[in-house]
Structure formats: C-alpha cells, structure tokens
Image (tube, rainbow, N blue to C red; front, side, top):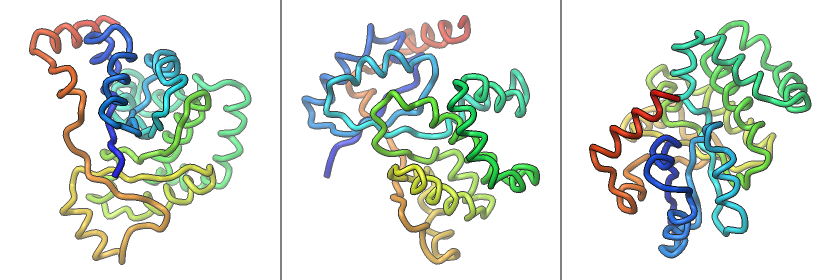
Length: 223
C-alpha cells in the first residue's frame, strides 16, 4: 500500500518553512508516493516549483470549501463564484462555459450537487500546469451530501471525473453515516474510491507550536 501525505494550508507551511523542498524530500525518504493537497491560489507557484522533477503524484481536493466560505463571507455566495471565474484565462473560461450548458437547469434550480461541481470545475481548470493524478471530493461537501441525503453529488462527481479522464476519490469524516447511506442507496457510485480522513504527516515532520500557529494566523489575517 502506497503512503499518502498531505500538504497543509498555505499559511501554515509558508510561515513554518522556507519553501516546500525539505518537506517533500523528507516525505520521499519515507516512501511517500502521493501528496494530498487542497489547492490555494496563493501557493500555486510554490507547489508547481517544488513538485518539478519529483516522483510524487498530486491528488487535488476539490472544491476548496474553506476558501469558498471565506470568499462568501466577504463577497457573498455569488461573488465567491465570480471570483473563481475571473481567475480563469479566456480559453479556460470558454471551456467552463461549454461545460456548464448541460448543467444550467440544475444551477438555476440551485441544486446542491450542481453548485459543488461548478466550484470544483472552476478550480480544476486552474491546475493544468500541475501533475494532478487524481481528484478527491472535499470531505465537507461529501459529509453535507450524506447529511442531506444527496446521492446525486456522488454520481455527478463520478461522471465528472470520468469525463475529464482523472481518477475520482471521495473523502469523508463520517464513516458511520457513509455506511448507513450506502446501505440505503445500494452501494457507492461506480468508479470512485472512498477514503476516511485522518491525521496527516505534517505534524510529525514539523510540530506546530502555539507561538508558530499564532504567527501564521497573524500573517494570514494581514494578507
């Protein structure tokens, strides 16, 4: 079984470490083959440079629900979506527009699954320069879908991953509810892997002291 490690939020490793190289070197020495990362625009360049020439596979966790929540608090839900649209280049924006056509009725009806996949699609299009091996559906979105009884999100995500020729992974923090829903729904969507989330390897590599965490939060608040 291959080892998987996580890349913490940008404000943590940016405050704790001068670049990612040493952390990735340490992971590779331990036999890690896969890096799990929730993409943040602030860290795109650093991650791209640090991953160059390495044998690590990058699994992107989409959409970034924490970042969306912060953007929605600042600009409202619509403004948060528009921010992602504005970050795309003309070609990517046109590509996203074509992809949205079949989902327009669902978006107009404000269906939960359609909104989540819109965010994921907009964020995925910004990752073309990175070695993305797989895409994982964010555990916050999955756990909300489980709570709401929204099986549609899982089936739409599986279809979305197949259409983009990437392997789909589903993350959840609620294994018990997942098991209950699978019994109710007759099993998971075909073509996706299910993983529980848990403690990662960053804390083992670089234990974060209260002082360092406070400094990181101050830096993030000032940005």
